[in-house]
Image (cartoon, rainbow, N blue to C red):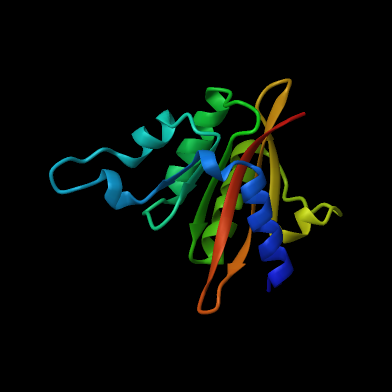
Length: 155
């Protein structure tokens, strides 16, 4: 269970990282009856530093495609992606795939921010950057979901 204090910390983190540059994509905004743009072609072209997908059909395969694209294109340091999954099993499956694909292990740090994370991995990108992938529960008054973050950080 995530405390109100942790939710406040997450909200402060999001504001600090540039909500003014956020790109919130709802699937219905770019997939209509008349014109269909594949989700991943849009996601890969977004130059925004902080991208959030809400209320979309973002799958684990989509996330793996985006993660591989960020690594292949050496996405710039400071870039952040966030999405949500309804079930913890999806998060567990994703991190098992990351472990198998990249040979990295789940890590929980002693730092307070990392205590939010149920899963936390660092994937090397190049000599100067790595991709941190982490997740944690996001509880509201009537439901719980699992937020997943990808962040490119300096080594």
